[in-house]
Image (cartoon, rainbow, N blue to C red; front, side, top):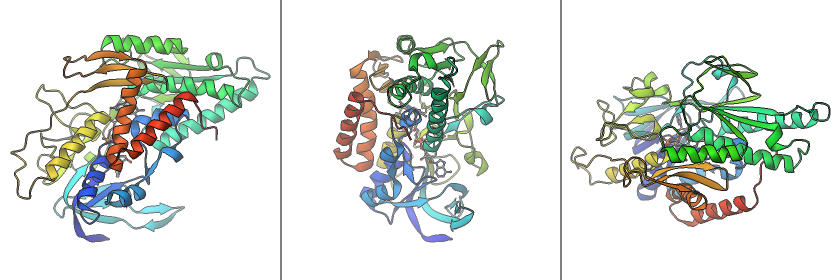
Length: 436
Ligand SMILES: Cc1cc2nc3c(=O)[nH]c(=O)nc-3n(C[C@H](O)[C@H](O)[C@H](O)COP(=O)(O)OP(=O)(O)OC[C@H]3O[C@@H](n4cnc5c(N)ncnc54)[C@H](O)[C@@H]3O)c2cc1C
């Protein structure tokens, strides 16, 4: 089924970058010209997924319905996963939607004048045996929710077992000491303290919920400055999180993780957070691919050799003047969405080649250590590659402001940003976890 009308812009992927672009364009041009396609029905900002996994953020409260966003921002929402691309016809193929074995929406084709690929990334297990079968990853809200429900079940079992087995508890192993692994460990520790205060009274969080990070590099947060990494390690130690560095994982089983030195770490729950790659779809549909399966783009975020197709965010490989690629971060996706918004609004007939290329502005890197604090560096561009070190409540407020900026971009007003700030302050004052 093909919609005869060609949208001026079709954005595939309503995440950190794609959703912002669709909302901004929709507010300018309306639903007849702008379409957003996503495989899910609702949006959760990906940097919040460690909170969903820990239960400190409820996806049913936080998730924003794409249909509602489409209505409020004036774009057309197309529900379904992109499965193909017909570059000659300028059409995106969207998979049929099934429910309980019944097809509820047929395969469709959506015609575009310009297409923006913003389909993010998925975790990369580098072929390590057992990861696909036994480890969780935080690729999307459903993965985070699945982890949370499994953790609750195991915590409840451990709580009951405690009456006859003093050693009962939960071993959680997080593979990868980058931002995702560090943020998840700290959030899980905070959540476990609330769990034991609430219903699970036999469990003592620090003693019975054993959280361990295994990192292959000599230190946590290896791409960031050493003072940030040291601060993160100190704050995790204070929270009874064990950090093992120089640890190359070679296998995961249902009960543990093995490293190259032959050590085995018991694991009731294991999370793989040691790398990402672009979704395999990009290569499958015949697009050129670069490092980790990403699609190469030029300075104007165009895919070379594929007319009218652009890419942004984690799925794009955008080189910068220093030879490095734009890092896969929410702030990159946000900046690139802004860049394309301005590019697409140039008067008809403007030459894109004449436009200044997209340049990544590094405003710093902040890593959340639970609801109370954050560590990181600010203004990387101004202070060369490292930025200046920040820690504590100020850093926490800066971290939260990134999320608020996303809310403001998708709602077009500061109203929801203020509501989100209020929620953050309440959460900080009375930490809650979702127990069902
Ligand atoms: C736990 C965690 C914490 C993080 N913390 C930070 C942080 O503090 N700061 C920071 O800058 N970055 C952080 N990141 C990284 C950040 O989330 C990503 O860099 C950012 O979300 C990338 O944005 P994006 O728009 O490229 O893709 P995403 O936000 O991942 O969105 C991709 C969208 O595409 C959709 N999609 C995928 N495939 C298809 C398909 N075939 N058809 C249709 N739709 C599809 C998905 O449903 C999704 O909505 C974190 C990531 C994680 C997992």
